[in-house]
Image 1 (spheres, helix red, strand yellow):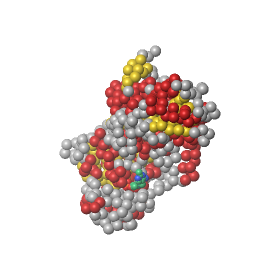
Image 2 (image 1 turned 90 degrees about the horizontal axis):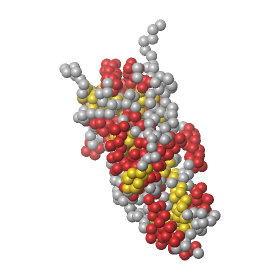
Image 3 (image 1 turned 45 degrees about the horizontal axis):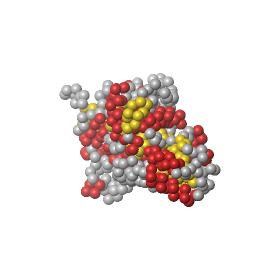
Image 4 (image 1 turned 120 degrees about the vertical axis):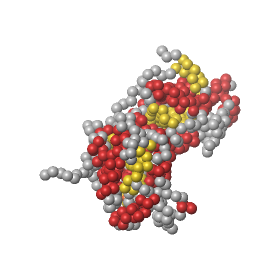
Length: 251
Length: 354
Ligand SMILES: Cc1ncc(C[n+]2csc(CCOP(=O)(O)OP(=O)(O)O)c2C)c(N)n1
Ligand code: SF4
């Protein structure tokens, strides 16, 4: 009997700690499929964040290291500079990458550090129970914005890809999502491209994945996906914000 | 035999790190450690190494964390305010059992403090370099020669015990020029690091470097295991210099640049017939309490001399354990004590113990 769907080789056969319906699992799968298809598991070192993905070191079969909150890209820089032939990726949430780790993110990007950044934007701090993230939307109710995010007080949500796209060192900055089969397929292509760019020595790639947090959004998975479509995509449009190596006209 | 050359302490330390096999340096500018980074920026690219000026001390120590995890000898250097920022990363390095070298060319504090030499980071280095139960190895050079000589040992003990090592210098040692014989070649090749995250190459299962343990008993077990290693370090790695100790009654205890001033005070005291001697700790963790213990019987009093309000004195008191009095003399904020000031304190004590 032909197997047509199976666990990617680079994903460990262990129970994930993610909540039911959370899209972190899908994103893990896309990263693992890319690693498998490129045949790079043996050369890859993954850096997990502080956030819901903190225990991703148990979920990927490549070598893994757990980073201090927000420092994943500095750590990845150290690994990549020590072993330039390795493939290094970080997997970070929005609090990790765009609040406490903003400096590390911006500077890894502007250095053109030859790494792949997987940025999971779920507009909330998942692990700590649903506080405002730098990406929480205007008006969004969270534990620390109980009356809705008031941008006059709490500032405006950060568009990471647009911001990083202005930096010379960035090879690829693309926003995708995983709310439907169609967008999952596109997300996979983007993630694989980001790894390919690293293999080709093209520099810094960031793939921002709009993701859901049913637990802290207080919505069912179905309703969360709809909330993402209705609220996140209008503010965080999908697309390629920078592709230094896009073929003429192929963008 | 290598020849003597004149060098700044900071440069001697940097060059010694290169001879010890360090090819990865990550740092952020700060006075008075500037020459360490400048020397690395010049030298490392010539020999295929990596010098990277990070966006902050936080980023620099995390780059060290990454490089150390990947299995190479990596280092960072900074001065007091910058080392505060490295605390988080140092705690993670300790929690991940990673070897590396951190250099603190101390200046006065707290806050932005000043840029003159100080020893007020002793507590930070030996007690609380970050959150959690852990220690790092701490080496205290007193000459430019030692700025060079202690580096290879720091790297190799860090590798041996899988813990971060620090060279705790000060602005005076960093900036002063003295003749130095640089260590030759890679005398301490790093041991194999089968735990490194450098790609499993499909020949081993994946390595994980991590400091998270959600089950308290697991975390306790790793900490207890680490403390067993610290006990071995305390038993076997203490280093100190003894100066005029054999018949001494007043034991000065002093490290780093201050110990040089204290040495001249001891000589002057001897000329006046006061039986003074000096114990100079070279390792601060492990604190050389065996040396204190050795002389506690014959000592009438111990005198800690520091460029701080009194930090190492706590370790002396712990070693003396109430058996003899422990006195203190210090200047702080970047002020160097003078030999005559120290002599004054010795005389005062000698008057008291007669
Ligand atoms: C230095 C530090 N500050 C705060 C925390 C607590 N903390 C753990 S996870 C987290 C937020 C993570 O949110 P995000 O990056 O958005 O990831 P998510 O959990 O949503 O996947 C915080 C603040 C910590 N572990 N370390
Ligand atoms: S808290 Fe939210 S982001 Fe975290 S696993 Fe649960 S649903 Fe996913």
